[in-house]
Every structure is written in C-alpha cells, then in structure tokens.
Image (tube, rainbow, N blue to C red; front, top):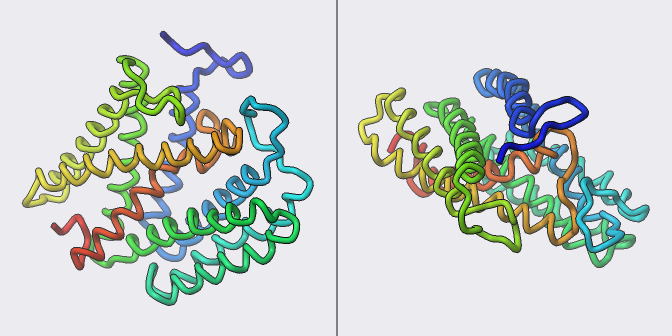
Length: 292
C-alpha cells in the first residue's frame, strides 16, 4: 500500500528520503574526494550531531509507555548533553593526527569515555554508563572512517564504495520490504523490518560490490560481491542495534534533522557498523579490502 502524503509538504516519506539524499550526497562525495582536512571536518561535524542525538535520547524524560516522535531531555540531562556532544568530534580530530585507530587514538577515546562518566555521574547516575557508551558508539566508527579514507591507494574509492553500499542496502531493504512484505524480522525491536527486506538489503549491497569490482577492474569480482553482501547484512544489523536503543528509551526518532530519515543516527546507523567491519578487515588482511 502506498504511503500517504505528508500534509505539510505533500511528499511521501520515500520522496523526502530521496530529496534529503540529493542534498546530502553531493556534499559528502566532495568531502570524500578532497580528503583531509575537508573529510575530517565533515566527519567531526557529523560525530557531534550523532553524539548530541545519543545524549538527548538517553536524557529523554519518558512521559508514558508510548514512544515519542523526538526525544525531550529531562532538565537534569542537559549538563551531560553539552559535554558528550563535543567529545566525539574532538576525539575524531585528535585521532586523525594519530593514524586513525592507532593505539594512541584508542587511549584518547577511552580517556574521553572516562571523562564523560565523571561529568554525567553526579546528575545522571543511573544513565551515566549509557552516556559513556555513546562516546564509544560514535567515536570508534567515525575514527574508523577517517582511517579508511587515509589509506593512500584505495582510501577515496573505499569510502565511496561503503557509502554506496549502505545507501543501496538501506534503499533495497526499504523498497523490497514494503513491496513484498512477509514475515517480520525482529518485531519486538523494529516492527517494520521483514525477512524480504533483509534480502533486498543484501542484494542491493551485493550489486554495489559487483559494480565496484567492474569499475575498479577488480581481478576477483565475486569476492568483492560476496564481501559487499556480508556488509549489507551487517548494515541491517547496525540498524537493528540502533532501533533497540531507541525502543529501550521510548523514542521513535533520534531527532528530525534530516527530513524523511529523522536524525543523523537514524540515517547512518548501518554505516557505523560497516565502517568498523571494514577497518577490522583491513587490519586483518594488512591492506584495503578493495585490494583483495
């Protein structure tokens, strides 16, 4: 069944998603191509936005058992929000000068986690561990993206491949899930997700891998296609993790910054999981996944 139009703008949710992507993707692609410092600054800005959303959700004052459209922080939550929002952005910039996810960068991130706990503990003792987890949830994946882009041979191509893969998986899952429907994937976590949508996400990611292999004249086309399909699966897993987080705190969207998508975290939840997976694979193989 087609989605009803939004009375305020006459646009369906899918149309809003498309328009948002049309505005954001060119900016993101330019920053990726230009590299440091433009890419680093962009990532730091997004890190700050994600951290702000995370802390708003954690500080959310639940007024009923129903999920609210956007998080409304309690009065006691703003102190932690102010500090935790800044932390990941600063950590990403510092980590960039230390080799992405090098040992020194890990130390800085862990120090940031401890500092966040010290700030959040007095006024938000029960939720302090959640504020601390938010620093890890945001800082590690965005530092991973910086590390991937810094790779001299395939850095730019790898980040574009990851972005395209995530967009294709998200779009494929959304379109196939709404068109085909069928059994629910995880009804208690994300009632709208279906097994058919998961298949659409994996297929979309695999298609991006196949196209990327041809564009780069990859000698092992099917290997990159398979890797992309697995990353598409992980992308959906990242989406479910964020859905579980929002459901725990009784929030529907992390914010309304991006029309059709909600917040930045709502848009890039799968990207965070994929970025970490790719940087781990790169470290394990001793080089970029695109060189396999």
